[in-house]
Length: 319
Image (cartoon, rainbow, N blue to C red):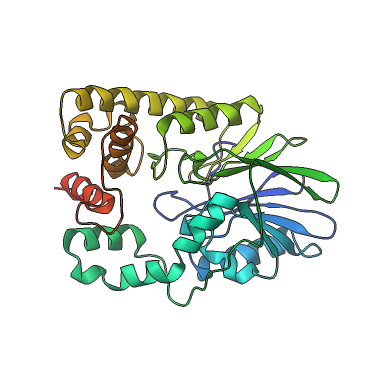
């Protein structure tokens, strides 16, 4: 199961589907569907309307002809997991309270405006075009959650139990996992990046380690990551190892007085050179520095923004 990585719907338990989007890099996120006798639950939408429409059509043919989508769960507020909400806006949309607040602050129109100006934005614009140029953000309207929760929420899809567990802040401020205890399947959102460097927008790092440990404690047999191929529980150990390595490498350089950009360049990728999206080290090292007490500007639009730092690493690695 963990080795299958092709685009489309893959049944991971009876009536439970993962929708995968290789190669799992920037914007190419996964989603899921839990089928019931009268209505189905969709875990996340995709980055634009075309991709979300394609996914809904595939799932309708495979899994939902008699059980239309009645509930949507957004695992977090990044656009590649919620911009497609507009196409399922008549369903009940559920998210953590923190996720809903983040979604309201980052509407799709903001991304559309950013991408409209990439040709005049130098190295950063070229980077944004390279990672997001395949997506169409025009005409997307926000469809915000209609139901929010804090902590945990248990839903029913027919007789099937679906547990929503808030594990953030980690990747973002309001990360949620979706766990099916009887099937031992967990949809992790971006708590799990499989085969690629994660990106620490919120943190702290210790919270993300704790989130991975909490997922592992559930004893899942199938882990559907936010990005990348299906996995077993070993992927959680891999991520915990990554974060511990990252923290220690960044701590040593912080204590030596290195700047965060210099530290990221000096650390490189170490044992994780085979993982995609290594430019995210620029953000992740900054996150560790912030955990250690540094005052850093993490705003995406600032002159020293995290996207500028990532763009520098991205283009440097291609020279």
